[in-house]
Length: 331
Ligand SMILES: Cc1ncc(COP(=O)(O)O)c(C=O)c1O
Image 1 (spheres, rainbow, N blue to C red):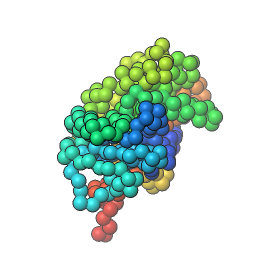
Image 2 (cartoon, rainbow, N blue to C red; image 1 turned 90 degrees about the horizontal axis):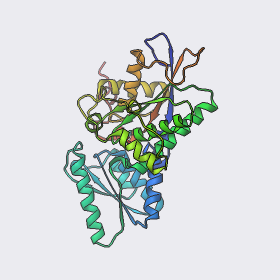
Image 3 (cartoon, protein in one colour; image 1 turned 45 degrees about the vertical axis):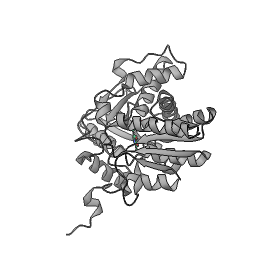
Image 4 (cartoon, helix red, strand yellow; image 1 turned 90 degrees about the vertical axis):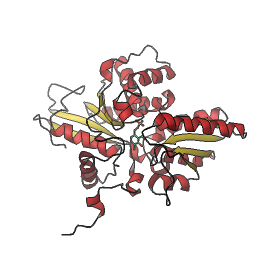
């Protein structure tokens, strides 16, 4: 149960995509399932992707490559640290080659150019590289979360849960756009279609890059669902929880990390899932999560599903947990 400001009780459900298994789990497992299958179908012998220094997506791509026996190259922001930690440590362990660019993690354009250059270099050296864009957030990658939306609806139907809100963290946008596409499919099929709230944790997505509605439409195209409509109302990017910027911790996020650990034994990170759950807790407390698609006459309970997208390895990187957790109390 969540503290709620509008008299209704809010029940929090957690979609445990942190437990997807691949290389420590997280949302990228679903996307990589489709992307790596595509790479293999195209005869690729190398995966090349890109991300921030502590990218979960890169770590999971490294694990995916290890599973299928394909070489993996990761183009990362920042400089090479003396000691690898967190996601970088795991990426190394999975056998990936790490390429540090010195680039600011918010400068995705520059990072993408570096990835494309590496793809060209590998091609010239005779390899068959398959490039994966930041976060795996291509239209094909987003399809994975349209499928996840339907899976979540089925799970709720099995348990007679009338879901009102689905909340996810949004950064490179594929997870969010896929859920929006899934919602559009459910609505077109006449199914209950709880709306999706994206919690923007990167400057780009908050400013409209990528365009979540457009990415959702392109995911629908991949699925051949070209007659399914995405409306402007379908796309909610809530930028209030970003704080000072991408990967800069917030008080609300840090408190959510501690709350989730203490109440569910869940591990959240300071860049993504902590800020996402921090938003859910604050919105519930402020009475913002009213009854939505799940409303029925005798229903005074609001059901909120938080997509736990993972991110725990970053807890073990420098600055990965709030100081008050890491440092023994002097009292
Ligand atoms: C743990 C975690 N949660 C959420 C996200 C955001 O997902 P997306 O990039 O699809 O917006 C990411 C992206 O890297 C992530 O690593």
